[in-house]
Amino acid sequence: MSDQDDQLLIAQVKKGDKKAFDKIVIKYQQRVTQLVARYVRDASEVQDVAQEVFIKTYKALPNFRGESAFYTWIYRIAVNTAKNYLVSKARRSSNYEVDVNDAENFEDAFKLKEGDTPEHLLLSEEIRETIQQAIEHLPDELKSAIRYRELDGMSYEEIANKMNCPVGTVRSRIFRAREAVDKILKPLLD
Image 1 (cartoon, helix red, strand yellow):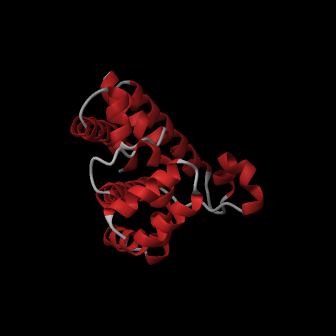
Image 2 (tube, rainbow, N blue to C red):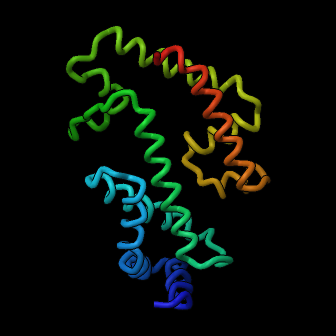
């Protein structure tokens, strides 16, 4: 399949043809999985992250303008998704398990894990509050960028459009915001 074939499939997906997107997934699945595997070392997680890449691609497809090759675009989504997964994994202080039957109580499920002590729960709450306060005290452009990224799950490109600035500026703002939050969190985590 050529780039012209991709453009045809993309046009069909934009018109609501889900089978056309299936063809895109089949075409790029192996390449995306291999790319994700360069970043995510846990083989059991690679497939999940690759699936997330295709979910994000499907949601963002209406915004694809065709200014670059489709693979270049999906490559960027895959790299960003893999990196975000690694950041998310590194920031998780604990791995909480939730019973599928308790999904509606997910917010409180972390409190039910065996071995959690009142001290651990208090520290988790303190970390959450510290992060929120740290974000609140950031300059507006950093605060907006980190919220769009971490809370709204927006891509760098979407944030750049929303904030009316280059993608590089968005990356810089998010980096500086994360750095500021990490600096404030460091004493709690040591």
